[in-house]
Image (cartoon, helix red, strand yellow):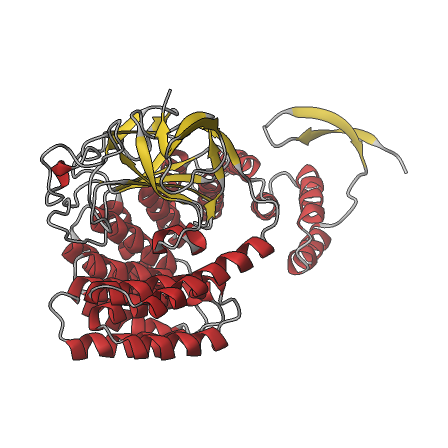
Length: 558
């Protein structure tokens, strides 16, 4: 066959020369072959076919449109847009060229959106909307505006698009997402009524999306309307029976409602909350799934004081849950505090509580061999102090998962912790009250609570002023019973060992001023640690040691 040199039109309008066969296919054959490739979605082959066809028939507009279709379907958005703009120049003012450019603009807008370039997405989709007002131009314009935080404009655009194109499958779910994000922002600003209006509209548009319902429930919960939050979550549990997030949010909301109402609710109302939580907890597989419910049960029974019901519920859950280790520790804590609220704890109850907590710690350590022991730890106090509670003592806050915790209180040279003339009636009768407390290790502050009152006259609270600091390895140090409003660090602040963090006080579960300190792992189970070698006074004996401290020792910092 004879060959000749033909000019070839490239995508960017550049002409070159290449040897090609003369009239390899007829126009009808190009059309039939293109339709076959489109139906089989062979986009790369379609691109090659159309480039050949354009060389043979450079004035056939449909070939340029089909080439653009092949480029878009190969995700060559930028190339498709350039080719579409050239097509418009070659075939100006035709419906097909305008439509092709519109498709290319929205494809490029979607590509920019996927790359996180929302300004470009907005520019391209706006051009597409102005060009031919396509349904997809409303989708991408609204999505870009949403990502740029321009929620009102996003909703206006997509609402208009939905009215014009009610059958478009993407407008409703994307408009629902716009309302969901708008509602989230309003909730974070505390504008809950407006947030709920937007979130309701979002869920109306796309009731398949559980996350919109969850945001709506959280908005009601954050505004203090627990009953409305629970109503929506009950609907969610019916609509999304396998959604773990819906169950978790419901469980947590039930716990928060109890905490919010426990001081005003009647005993029968609290008992009803407990039984409802128990029924839900029995359907859970493990402790983590039931944790919020178990906390509601434990805290609720501490209010009602029903020790027998506590025993029966926890014994039942112990049989049902696949991992009762954490349940044992929690039960030991709550059984003890239930009796402690009533007065002195009977010896047999204390022993029962201790045995459960120690069983839990033994099982945990067996399941987690090789746990870290910290050495050469900095002392948290700068003056001489007495060890009031040692590791794994018979105090409830020093056993179980809290096995490796200490209690310290400042003393004078004679070993007294009471100031001259003090009568142990007020917190400031103690040397320890107001004593500076220092960080034991470097880290970042993750939790601060500083507004709880200090106890006086032997009173006893349950929620003390505390600081948690996360170490570089992910574990934590914990300090509690600070004096009210004395903590000088903030959440997110970097801390060095030896840095002042606050003053010792008598807040929380403390009848006398002291400092409670621990190292914890990421499961909030205490870890062993040893301080730097210090001088110790034990009765008449004095020596240096870096061994674990014993109760009654007086530590003399260097």
